Image (tube, rainbow, N blue to C red; front, side, top):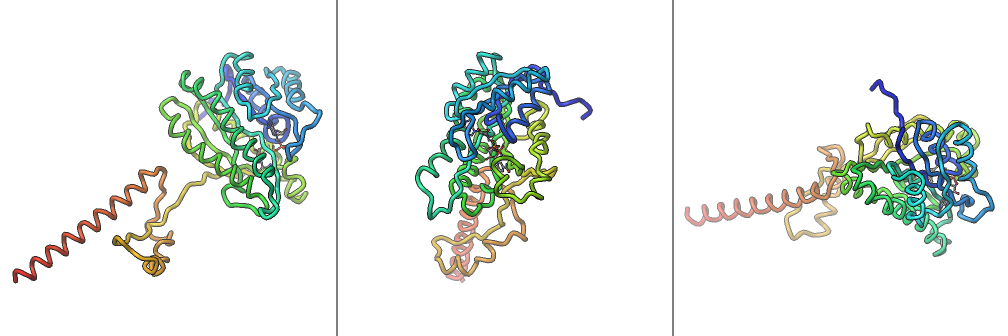
Length: 317
Ligand code: NAI
């Protein structure tokens, strides 16, 4: 592909764009010709209010560089207001980067309802709310690109992040279904799981690690996924310091049991159930699971018919 990736005449919403990754995305899209809604509530990394208006600062920066942008300072919980800002200023929405986020790290034993609920509110409800408010617009125009932000914490689990890992994997669940529902209307939805130096990681990662993790290194993947030339959808990518890789589900060939069956039989075939070496599969829909149900039902039926034939043969001989 020789042509450049540009966003002229595209309207891009970036949530949580006052700092860190979101700020880099906003600067990039504006530099590539997009009209950008820079959303940010201006909170600390744990969600406490500040008197700053980082969204406006980023808008000023974009304008100073000759770009087009407008600030929005609503919480992502109120997605309709953010989308309204886009419609009022630019008349449409083509791309949403659901990026706003906070942390409330604490072991599950010490976690309060507030720690849990705040994380769900910002990450899950925020991603839902902004996307829902733009969904009908994208369907009607037959175009949309949505990039949701997951985390390695959601993919693998992470000590002290029960709330955050639940929210981040939940967000990928939304990606998976919206990719299917948006397919015919040319709406593509993907999740990235980034690692980058930001307010969020500066206290948890060592200095030497942070030096390689400039948030700028996350931008190229987001730029490509957000572009009209990219047809990728329903996918999950890990990205950090110039490393990008897609992830997928792998399912063992597994075991088929005669029905009914027992816990002892499960125990005795545990190695087969968990064997990824022999004929693993890469399912992408629940229909792939029903295929296994049918396979087993047919197998059992065939076995019964053969047993009946054998029995008939022995009684007649
Ligand atoms: P950051 O703390 O530098 O930036 C997040 C921004 O979101 C802040 O400017 C904050 O004011 C804003 N924000 C928070 N709550 C908001 C709300 N309710 N409405 C609107 N804006 C809100 O964090 P960073 O690192 O740039 O994180 C961006 C995204 O990437 C987050 O979703 C985070 O969970 C995710 N992420 C980051 C990783 C990293 O290594 N930095 C690792 C995995 C995921």
